[in-house]
Structures are given as structure tokens and as C-alpha cells.
Image 1 (cartoon, helix red, strand yellow):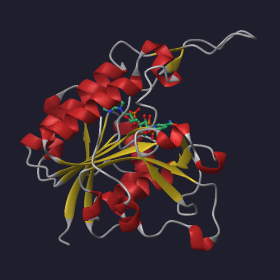
Image 2 (image 1 turned 90 degrees about the vertical axis):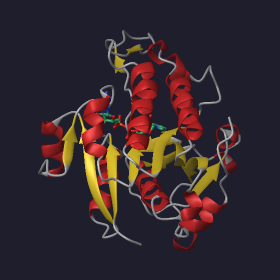
Image 3 (image 1 turned 45 degrees about the vertical axis):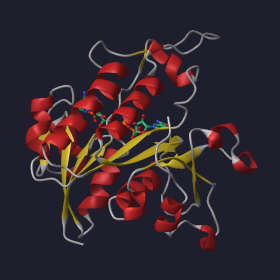
Image 4 (image 1 turned 180 degrees about the horizontal axis):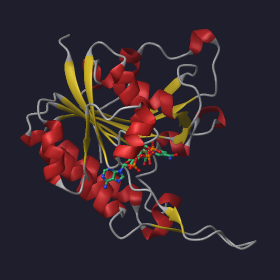
Length: 256
Ligand code: NAP
């Protein structure tokens, strides 16, 4: 395999930064990062070398970063903020900033990334999204009335219809726990969310999601696939997922 140049957007995010680090350490790849904040990149990586700064709502700032890349990893996301600490007995309330709504960030911002990538001659996009998108009434859609999962799913559809090679990873609840110590599970269109095997939590460490992103850039069997991803709790050594080609072989093209 010749060395591939990859751009990771959301590279200062919790999962994006792990993907960036994994790709930095892998001799098969040269990685570039796209982020909003030079200070955050400097703090996380000790340097801003190979970083491009801008906003995914601004296509021009993406163009320069994508030049020369063969693949794009999309790890950007809108993030709701708590309105105010709740009084006892009250529900938590969330809101999005006017320029950080899911429609602008998860739909328009992802569409900008897909269009710019195609114009730049990029051949593959790996997109990390979320389980739950088949349910309009999912609690995440209600947060700040942002309909975040609906906008994420619309962006997934746009990606699939664009014709570029894609891998869509719809993660379960993200955990800040060690990767590489669990059996991973793939599923289709929220089936696992509705019927998790053995009633296990529908969650997965961010480090495992990041590893799947890296493997999707290597394994041809991950091309043109969309799948939900979660994990069993920590497994005994022989159950830990190591054969990623076999995992991707269980997945299918996106169905909306
Ligand atoms: P995260 O830490 O919130 O990272 C999101 C990244 O997007 C940040 O780096 C942020 O930049 C960047 N970003 C936001 N708006 C931007 C803009 N306008 N221009 C450029 N960059 C922008 O994400 P995460 O928690 O690792 O989640 C990764 C993905 O998994 C997301 O799509 C998320 O929805 C999905 N997911 C999350 C959960 C969960 O339990 N949290 C569950 C399932 C799926 P800054 O670094 O400057 O803030």
C-alpha cells in the first residue's frame, strides 16, 4: 500500500484527536488535521504542524487543507451547551449557539466537506455519526430542539448519493475508556439499539471507534458500507476483536 494522505476534521475533538494520533503513528499514512483553534491543537499535540485552521461552514478554509489528500475523515459535530444549572427537580436544558446548530454544522458543514473533498479529488470519506437516527423522537433530537440525529442522517444520505466511496460509522454512546480490550459489534439502522444482545449497554470506547476509522482506511471491505457500532463490556483475550476485515464483511451498503 502506498502512503495515503488523510485529512481529519474535528481533529481537536475527543474522538478526532485519537484518530489523528493513531494515523500519526501509522507508517501507512501521512495525516493532516483541520480544527478551529490553534491553541487547542498546540495544547493537545504540542505543535500545530500539519494543521489547517478554519470553520467547516466556510468552504474556502477547507479547500487548502484537502489539497493532495486521498481520504477525508469527518469527525466534526455540533455540541449543545447546558442553558443553566437546573434547580432541584428540574430537567437539564440545552441549547445550541446560533452559528453552531446541527443544521449548520452537521448538515451544511458536512455537505461542505463532502463537496470540497470531491472537488479536491479525494477518493474516500470515512464519516463518524451516531446510532439513533431512525427515531425522530430520540432524546438527542429534542436537545435544544436541534434535531441533531436527523441532520446527521441527512448528511449521510448526501454522502452516499454523492457517489464517492464512503464508510459511515454510527457509534453508540461514547466512553472515555481504553480501546482494544473489547469485542465489537456491528448492526444496521438501530436494530442493536432496539434489541441489544444480552441487554448490554449500547456504548463503545472512543478509542475503539478511532481504531475502526483507521481500519476503514486500510480495508477494502469497509468501502461503501454504513453500520452501527457498539461493544461488549471488556472481553477475555480470545474474544477481543482483531479481525477487522471479518467485522466489515458483516456490514452492508447504506439503506435509508
Ligand atoms: P467532539 O469531541 O464534540 O468533537 C467535535 C469536533 O467538531 C470538535 O473538534 C469541534 O471543534 C469540531 N467542530 C464543531 N463545529 C465546528 C465547525 N463549525 N468548524 C470546525 N470544526 C468544528 O466529538 P466526540 O464526542 O468525539 O464525538 C464524535 C462523533 O461521534 C460526533 O459526530 C458525535 O455526534 C458522535 N457520537 C457521539 C456520542 C456521544 O456519546 N457523545 C454517541 C454517538 C455518536 P473544537 O475542538 O474546536 O470544539
